[in-house]
Length: 321
Image (tube, rainbow, N blue to C red; front, side):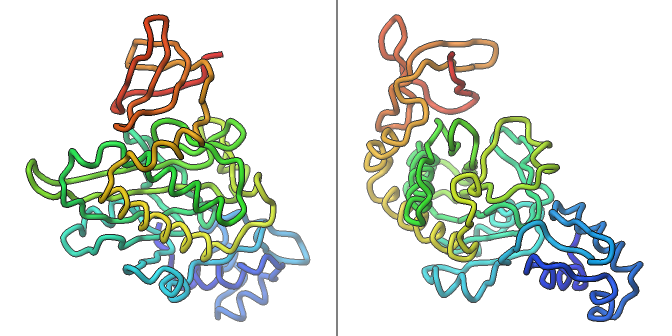
């Protein structure tokens, strides 16, 4: 669904979290109250947490600070920042333009209509309820040097959140962020290139901020949001800019030093550290005690036969109790 100028203006008017009557909105936009009602229905389809009250009008459940490109660019000046109200996929937008981009260039959206996660699973992205961020990076050393990148990105995301006062976020191998045992965010790294040459990386981050209950019901696992950590959400422009800056720094460090410089911090943040886990490999299940990661990003699993090492791919880690 595209976001027409009228609908974009409606969102801006409603972003203060106050009631606005249908009559008032119609006068401001030069349309009828019936037309306002139709536009509101369309906005609900995008996932906006809107409700109406007879005699008072329409309002958002919580105020919403929309992304402002000028503000973001001033706070994260290293490379261009692109903002979209609605997009198919921020990752795909960058993947389609890799030959035109600078390392560190990023793309933000209020809403994705074709967002995807690991193994192609759909990513639920209601309007204004998540941080939806993708970043491009050209890795001169080639694809082989990208091993373990999602783990380094996870460390950067947690450190950005900690710098804003969000404590207690942990990492789940290989690419998820957890809070109190529930998924707070996911990371998707996609790449293209040929053997023996530099490669194009696109790093996608989806972080739950304040999800409407009806949208949360569509998610097939236990989930968390930043609002669970602190009900007073930080300004989304500050959050996005802080995330961009931390990610740019981490990618530069990763390019120079590889994963090794992130391993200790990742192990500090490991959600499953010292706990029984199950590792699913297709139809096979392996049980053991999680013992962090090694310098390659391989999962260290203590089994009855000693420490075993497992690298990414079609693997899924679950709690073992």
